[in-house]
Length: 99
Image (cartoon, rainbow, N blue to C red; front, side):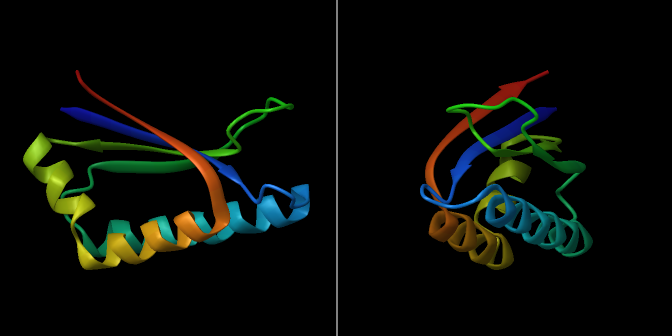
């Protein structure tokens, strides 16, 4: 199994309300992806409870293999969500591991 976690910092000069609205939109988009991309075994979007200069949101997702993760990453609907997140974020990091 492959765990795929991505962290983002949102709206560099934005408010907490703007960030929370973005997280809610991202949750909805992720829920939609789960209905159309069968390779997704699990996906959850989380808001960071810590304050300060931190990543604001993450997606924690699971796939059966790197091939399935790559199918997800290259899926046209995922690419739309990725473009949305690129528009609203100013920093991100990705962490993938096998378990």
